[in-house]
Amino acid sequence: MKYWLMKTEPDVFSFEDLIKSPDRTTFWEGVRNYQARNLMRDEFKVGHKVLVYHSNLADPVIPGVAEVVKTAYPDDTALDPKSDYFDPKAKGVSPWVRVDIKATHRFAVPVTRSKLKTEPALAKMMVLQKGARLSVQPLTELEFKHLCGLGKPKALP
DNA sequence: GCCAACGTTGGC
DNA sequence: GCCAACGTTGGC
Image (cartoon, chains in turn purple, orange, red):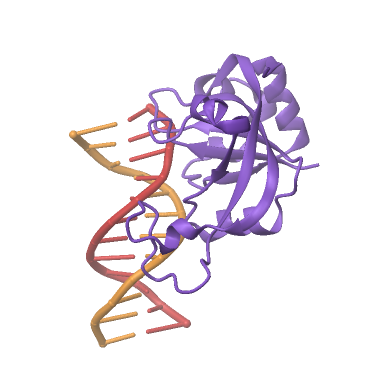
């Protein structure tokens, strides 16, 4: 079992948008960073847990939990000139990948970044390190469990 | 809105 | 292959 944190700007795609998606599932597209892509392509397995992180807020927040339901496959938005995620260098098979994730639990207590910073157990979380821009980050099992302790996950119906 | 940190690009 | 310039991210 592995645990991940995935950033999204809630104006673009929020956890609530994920919950409203068919089967609470969507393809996580638009990752255009090699390190993040390699994690999704090489490390993501079905059943891995994902914490969604809403960035670019006055106080960023983790609203809930999802899980990987499909491993990496080509992200064809890179080939579509009309897409926001178009990559003019991409030719043939898209070099970028997406995975499918499904929302499983909403946090009864959404965990804010300001809260994270008060937790000694989370001091090493990548997202708290200065300049940590990576949009897909690994979490340790202990970090994941600690975060769930704070967030009080409620299973989605 | 500001700006530090980072990743990428491109001239040499 | 170096590195300055640039564009983007994302916290504050």
